[in-house]
Length: 165
Image (cartoon, rainbow, N blue to C red):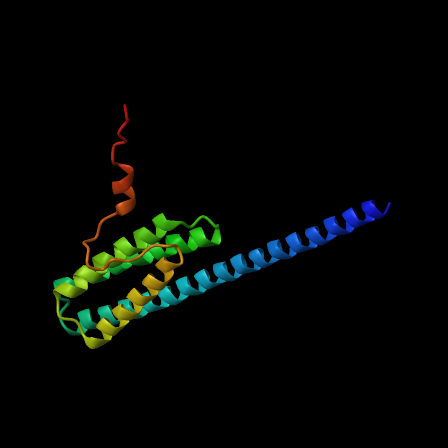
């Protein structure tokens, strides 16, 4: 009987420990999801600020082609962010979503590099890039701003598989 009660107590302690670990992991995942939603909201706000500054500069300075290209690319980035936000809400986000955001951001970056932009636009863009880098690191993706825009996920998926004989 003593052996049985000892085994029962051991099993109860092990169950409590496992329950505690599972509960803390769940709390960490919820905090992570909240951090991601906050990061997306911040990024959306920064993109809105940048878009406002670009539109203001286009109205006041005649609308340079590079600013129109940047504005168009920024709209694409906003669509990618909205898609990512929907996937976060549905808990379906992944690295491909982050890569699409980075690709859209690289298009904006290349458009802004071409023409002379105001200091406000440069500062806003630097903030957006920092936020994208921070968000991408949460998914293990590093943004390389020096490479040209390309969709790396489809390029990797289209490579042929070689059979080893």
